[in-house]
Length: 116
Image (cartoon, rainbow, N blue to C red; front, side, top):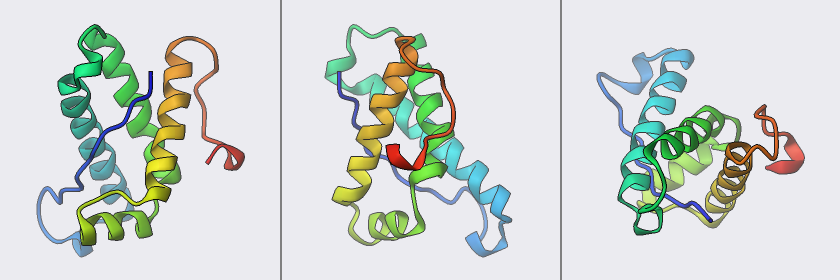
């Protein structure tokens, strides 16, 4: 099953310039994961998928997103309101890797450069 989703970057409080890098990363992971859960739970193709699997999938995606989502990706998303082709390809590859991990086909770990 191919998992795709749309995510929105939200700044929870204050200016992004007032955040540390770690604060930005933590906020990004939390926001990415929250949006993933909403999107995956609402996706018609996931109607037979247990919530436990959706939570595992979104946790995996959110943990790994900072490894491959770039500031250029975020800037394009903010500017156009849409994911660029490059970002979508990276999301699809990460989604496939997370689904394989859930199925027990691979061990979870950092996404290696050849997988990006």
